[in-house]
Amino acid sequence: MPQTPVKSNQRLSIRIDASQKELLMRAASIQSTDLTEFVTRTSVSAANAIIEQHNRLELTEQDTSYLLDLLETPPAPNDKLKAAAAALPLHT
Image 1 (spheres, rainbow, N blue to C red):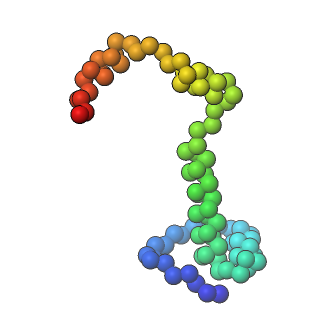
Image 2 (spheres, rainbow, N blue to C red):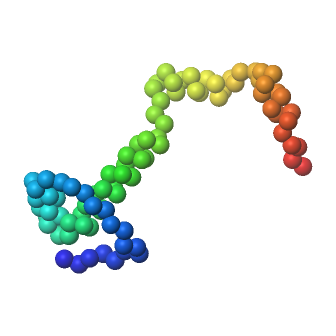
Image 3 (cartoon, rainbow, N blue to C red):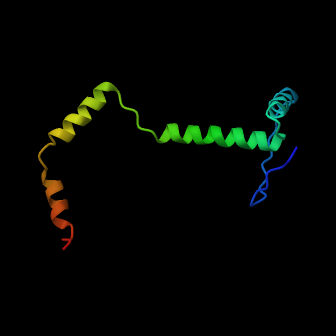
């Protein structure tokens, strides 16, 4: 099977039992790729999905309503916020 060239040659060693390796090899064969390419592609895809899910903010309907209400009618600034705003440099 053709190998995909990589810019660097980093290695990752993992320990798996024989049945897991057989399963991975079978899946790689079905997709007409070698084990390294299959494991790399599927692992990176899964990692990206996990990171995307972690970075996504999901609000309940109640939280969404609360946030929209705050954006439409923000509370009056308190003394700390006024002091922080006054401390900012003026941009001209």
